[in-house]
Length: 345
Ligand SMILES: Nc1nc2c(ncn2[C@@H]2O[C@H](COP(=O)(O)OP(=O)(O)OP(=O)(O)O)[C@@H](O)[C@H]2O)c(=O)[nH]1
Ligand SMILES: [Mg+2]
Image (cartoon, rainbow, N blue to C red):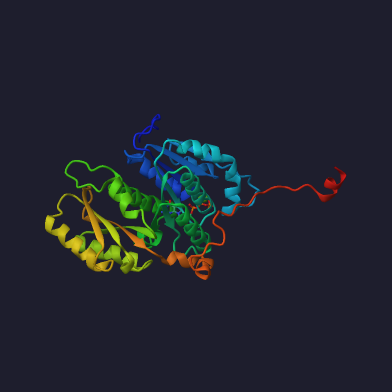
């Protein structure tokens, strides 16, 4: 794992992990990233800040009895805005990683995005969406996703359901660890500089692909047979959450133990063009190596105007894109003096 570097930053890439999911996912990325120069872990829960031994820790110290909701947590975070702004000094890009649906990730991710935008930083929000079965988390996730979209330059969605290939009997934390490994590998393959004979994608292409209206979706599919099977698997999981025709840009990264032929790559790209978009989708590709059996297709597609997650927030449907309040709602837990005390003074 990389030590925290002293300033000045070279490229200016920093990252926040927010809440339990965000801190866990970022701690995986932290172990192998050479590109991200500074890491910060932000949560109200001390346990989340311990997933990585390194990086800056920002504890949003909420009283155990204080109300917990995304807007209440934003209210408490008001005391930490200077620390957040200080962390962002000299940065040009910020990755904000979180899971949506709980109180912390849903509350703080849009706030961090807003602060970063005010500081003219390019904001890439990377969000894991709740499982289908976590119905009690859908509303907060839907509201937060819409706020994050407004406050960010690019939003990359990861559908937790699509990463959970079979209903496993393993404990939930082990399942998360496997999913987080997949997510961090995929992001590293997409943004990190290529090594050896790899054909890299790189940060510039990554940002150009996602920095547009709507949403980008990241999927990872493994296959023991051929790239085609992995691609069809990836398109099926995207089809569960969005309309494939809306896709405008894509990056396909094929990771294998070195046996992908030029013919395979050409066939995969043409297949991708027929599965997604309206025939004019722009496709970039990368080829990288891994030490696993079979191959992994990492697919990042962008340009989706909507996803099924938009329906998690019923108000968004009613308002059809009109925002009642451009700013984020924030609750403050302030004890008001009794009226009788006021009269005495
Ligand atoms: N991919 C992935 N998803 C996770 C992980 N942990 C939680 N999630 C999902 O992320 C969503 C938000 O959950 P948490 O991150 O636990 O919530 P939080 O932001 O810590 O907020 P609180 O629940 O109030 O503590 C949920 O729908 C979970 O299914 C993880 O390690 N990896
Ligand atoms: Mg939590």
